[in-house]
Amino acid sequence: MFDLAGYGQQIFSGTMTTIELSVLSLILSFIIGLLGASAKLAKSRVLRGMSTVYTTLIRGVPDLVLMLLIFYSLQIWLNDFSDYLDSLQNSIDFEFPLDPFTSGVITLGFIYGAYFTETFRGAFLAVPKGQLEAARAFGMRPMLVFRRILFPQMMRYALPGIGNNWQVILKATALVSLIGLSDVVKAAQAAGEATFRTFFFISVAGLVYLVLTVISNGVLMFLQRKYAVGVRKAAL
Amino acid sequence: MIGIIQTYWQALLYSDGYRMTGLAMTLWLLVISCGIGFCLAVPLAVLRNARSPLLWFPVWLYTFLFRGTPLYVQLLLIYTGIYGLDFIHNTAPFNEFFRQGLNCTILSFALNTGAYTTEIFAGSIKETSHGEVDAGLAMGMSRFTLYRRIIIPSALRRALPVYSNEVILMLHATTLAFTATVPDILKVANDAYSATYDPFDCFGVAALIYLCVSFGLIFLFRRAERHFLAYLSP
Image 1 (cartoon, chains in turn blue, cyan):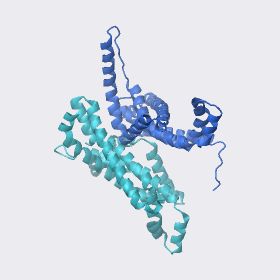
Image 2: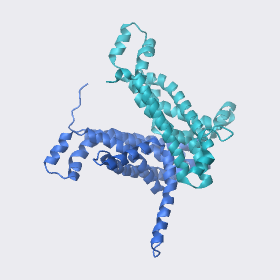
Image 3: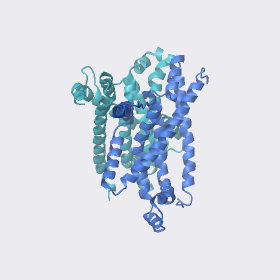
C-alpha cells in the first residue's frame, strides 16, 4: 500500500527543500519584522510612513501575486543594475544570477516580514514602559535594552503571532513550486504523473505537511511554556 | 502600464468576450466559496462543541486535515488527483463534475474556508456567556430553539471581526484558481505577461485590483461591525 515506486528519495529531498525554505524565510521575515516594528514605533515621521505603506500594501495584495511580481521582476532589476555597473567601468563583468531558491526566500521573507511587523509592533507595545525606563536609568545602551529587557519580555506576547505566521509560511512554501522550485509538491506531482497515481502521491505531500504542522505545534507549545516562566496564570 | 490596461481592461474586469473573467470571476469564486463554507461551518461548529466524541471527533479531524495542509495541495488533490482515479472516470456524473476546473476549484475552496470558519465559529460558540444560555433555559426554550434564537446569533456577531479576516485571506487564496485554468484576475495578468514579458506592469495591475478589492471588503466589514456589534461599543 505504502509503495513510493522509487520516488522516496525525491520526495525526501523535496521535503528538505520545503523545510530549508520555510526556516530561512522565517529568519529573514523575523529580521524584517523587528526592523519594521522599530520603524513603526520610531519618532521619525518618514520611517513611520514608510513602514505603514509597506505593511498596508503587502497585506492587501495576495501573496501569490506578489510572489510572481517579485520573482519575475527581481531578476530584471538585477540585470539592469549589473548593466549599469558594467557601463560605469568595463574591466569587470558584473552578474547576479538568481536561482529560484534564493528568490523564493527573498520573496517569502519580504511578504511575511509585513505580517511580522504587525505582530512585533503589538508585542513591543505590550511590554510595560517602566521596564524600559528602569533599564535606561541603569545606563544601558539602546542595543542592551533591546537584548536584555525588551526582547525577552516581548517574545512572550509575540509567540502566538509568530506561531501563526510560521504555519502560514510553511503552507505558503507550497506556492513556490509554481515558480519552478523543486519542493515536496513538485516532487509529488512529478512522481504522480510518471506512475499515474497522482491521488496517492499528492496525498503523501499533504501528509508531509500534516506531520510538519504537528511537529511545529509541539515546538511552539514548548517555547510558549519557556517564555512564560515566572508569569502567574489566573486560576479559572 | 497604460498599454496593458488599454489592451486588457475588459478581460481584467469582467469578460474576454466568451466567458466571465477577471474581477467578476474572482468575486464569484469568493462569494460562492465563502457562501458554501459558511453554510457548512454553522452546523459543524455546533457539532464541534458537542459532548459526545462521536460527534466532535469527525469535525475535529476535518478541520485538522484541511487546516494542516496547504490549499494548493488540496486543489491539486481534487483537480488532478481525484480525476485520475478509475472509479471517478467511469462514473458519468462524477466524470462530468470533476472534469471542469471551476467545479474543482470551488469545491476545494469551499472545503478549505469551511474548515477555518468552523474553528472560528466553534471558538465563538464556546465563549458564549453562561448568563445568556441560563436565561434561554429559564424561558423554557428547547435545545434547538436555544441554539437558533440565542447561541448562534450571538456567536456569529462576536465572530464577525475574525470572520472578516478569513474572508480577506480567502480573497487572497482565490489567486490559486489560475492553476486550475479558471480565468480569474491573476490568469488574465499571467496571459498578459506571456504576451508582453513585462512582469512588473502586468502583475502590478493585478496587485492594484486586488488591493482595491481588499480595501472594499475591509470597508464593508467595518460597516457591518458597526451595525451588528453596536451593543458592544463603549
